[in-house]
Length: 305
Image (cartoon, rainbow, N blue to C red; front, side):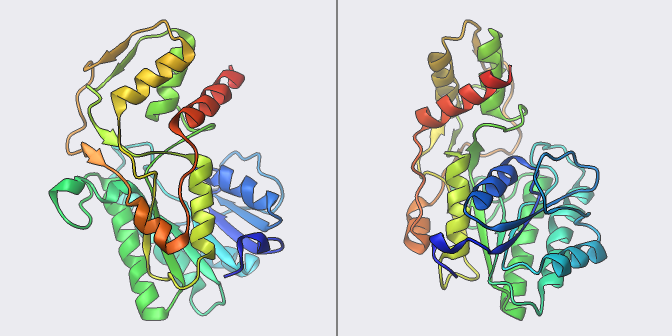
């Protein structure tokens, strides 16, 4: 793969480009001079610039046509269903998240794509301390684990240059308010009370621009085909402490009502990235502190008001 400064002119296909992480990735690669093809589901409203493509990842012929049209040097696959919906229908999750990967990899077989980055999720690990390997606790996580397995299969069987990245608790400007941090920030800015679980879960919060840098680093690093990489800080933070920090930064007047909501059944109480392994393989580390990231997120939401 080229060095980080050689993205200019690269043909890059991004599926799920209108999602939270996808929009940040599109913007960064365009700023680096890439010819970005932004893929999204038909009917999705998009403010993305030229080279936008509408196709259903569940339709193998539509996916094949998109690949043939773009002839990508690099592919980032972010298209997924259920990211913000724990109650997603299991069959829909399977069709989109696992079936979509199969459709994409079939379309890329026999081509000359330099790197395919599949974007998974830390939720594939599930209760990390309870077992080795993957232990998904939701239909979404299970379908993403299946997608990872297909990626490994296509790497082994057909030598496709696949790397999987698993972002941890991503946050930042533009994130849907169904997620913890934007929901808490919105409540804080509006002076509302914020009901939540007891908040003892220790998760790895990583800023979205760091994640995008990690994804491009995974596309650049030589000799890592077949690997799976965590994208996180390597530091676990209790949810309650993160919400308390948001309250401190905003001077919020509402109450944090910890314990008002129950824990999600089967959800992990401790889930932190193996940041050292990722740094060894691709030379990437998250650099944005939690306070810096929260301030940027607060400013972004305040600007929308």
